[in-house]
Amino acid sequence: MGMTKVNVKDIDWNNLGFEYMDLPYRFTSHFKNGEWQDAGLVEDSTLHISEASPVLHYGQAVFEGMKAYRTPEDKVQLFRPDQNAARMKKSCERLLMPAFPEDQFVEAVKSVVKANIDFVPPYGTGATLYLRPLMIGTGSTIGVHPADEYIFTIFAMPVGNYFKGGLSPVNFITSDYDRAAHRGTGQSKVGGNYAASLLPGDEAHKQGFADCVYLDPVEHRKIEEVGSANFFGITKNNIFRTPKSPSILPSITKYSLLWLAENRLGLKAEEADVFVDQLDDYKEAGACGTAAVISPIGGLQHNGKLHVFYSETEVGPITSKLFETLTGIQFGTVEAPEGWVQTV
Ligand code: PLP
Ligand code: COI
Image (cartoon, rainbow, N blue to C red; front, top):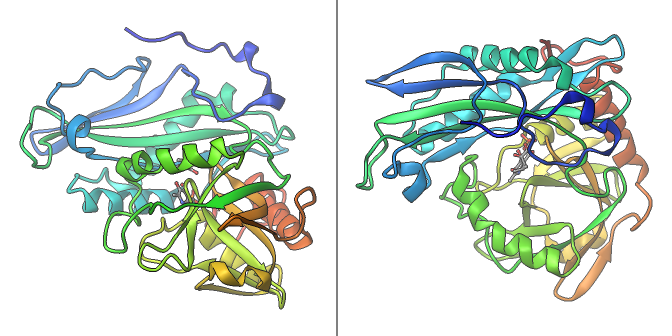
């Protein structure tokens, strides 16, 4: 079994989007009889599971997203992988899944990067090796109960830009739908949140927008996040502000930018309400996340009106500075705060 493996010689490093590729190796481990077992690298990129697997019926699935970066010295490094391990553990707890031990998680990620090292894009292309840790409930538990068996896997693929613009601005539109409820699963990186975002995302795409921006599920007055990234704005009086909400994903990129905005750019930085009827307070805005990196938001359409932040074609100076600082740390050309990067 298996699909067609990609040949490293066929990869055009400068023109990668965000597309699956079947690389030589992935890590897998199986949870059976109350423990994780058979941990190691495998070549088979397909999974064989029971038709009664809870993941297929009831969405018992959590995942993570992280990247490996090649430095100018040809070292390969991870950005805050301990944070992904910790978040995956929390997501697992929300869906009653047995977390994969956090220290072994980071080691497993490193083993996947090492096994596919030729697929870590060259420094200077801006491309990275995206890693997708995934856990699903398997076994034959047809009732609405947690699975008794699980598969944990980490696969990888080289990626370029997630949003087509890269570091040029793209436009977003607010959605009438909610992504998640305040006391629901919005904080957890669970598959169902993304299933729920497909229709709103599709409606945004059909109207020519990069994606939609969700509003708070109670009053629809405050910005929550983008379907696949957090939101930030720079106020006219130089505050880096990003929404505070119990139903958004605690983005590792967002927390990194909060710290960098304050400690490297000298801005005030806060998690606070971002009211959709007060967009005039902001001179720049962006979407941030592992896949999105920092994607400048040109304009945000709400109730039929397009609000342009800095420009629909140019990137604002603070957004640019944040991008340079963040990606400089990730690619090893800007000094990283203690513990933020780990060499593979
Ligand atoms: N929000 C959502 C809904 C996401 O899927 C992601 C991606 O992981 C993010 C935000 C950004 O999180 P992070 O910066 O940890 O990648
Ligand atoms: C990420 O940024 O890693 C994500 O998971 C976002 C998206 C591709 C679902």
